[in-house]
Image (tube, rainbow, N blue to C red; front, side, top):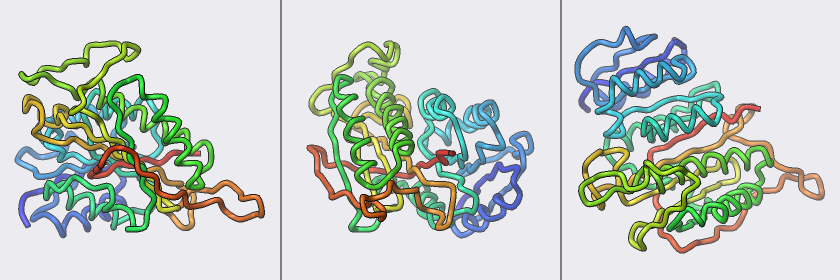
Length: 298
């Protein structure tokens, strides 16, 4: 156990619950209600409540701790957030760790995420799902395959029993993450962005060994996405290609309990709940990571 963790959270009850979990992983936990109160010094991990910070506050936090952000050591809790704000967190700021804030803290989720971040064991969305969860791996080599991926993602969500609005949210998240992987992540041999300057309506094509792997996962009560690219440029600027597989993951969960980790399912023809799509393997091998999630709202 080593290092310090910083919590920035105006919700004192939530902050205490987070501190209890972090206290088992680091030597010292510092808790403040706003960024201006954060002391100077080195931290191993920063955990913040996006709902209390807002877009401007989150931007300031990611700017102040840009070195930690680049190392994947900043974690945001997010409640209801619009698509533009979510896209900004991932696209403009290169954030890679987000957890849903759905009322009561899920200590298990936070524990797994913190361990993965601090140990550098960021690969494997499977850590958040049981062994019998349904998985779908899809390989994407260019922007022309975007629509096919979104159709696949929506069908996977609906097949797992999610309502249409949740399937749409899953597709929105998948779209943003794939766009980052295709346009923002690729770099040349000098570590310079290849496509970041292009409009997102301009097509891009990756080399065969640069393919992006998208993994969809569901256990009937939770759903996850991870998008993996072979560049690592958003998390470790200047490291060049092939040095880090950069994953992002989101999980969509229903805020209305109980139980907490459920989404409402579509009625089956005889009044039951439609659940459990069989696993279908695509062409990729697929890995995932330290997680993300957000509250999809109503």
